[in-house]
Length: 101
Image: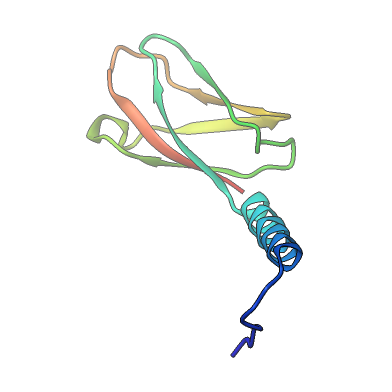
């Protein structure tokens, strides 16, 4: 168990707080990005902007609405965005959750 002294000086508190913030930032920068996207009707591609996307990203979509079930797609990832290519049709509510690795 971590043993900390009980009477911290203001400088001690600042140093510990800075270390904690640095640690949280390091962890959060390595976590995958998530979000949702709904494909518009009658278009064959959808661009999603997300700062965590890079050309090396792997993007996984998961249907979040029954109308999205069975949709076939492919994607290309770039700096700060990815483009999903899908069938162009009149079906509304083709909503997906996504994660970027």
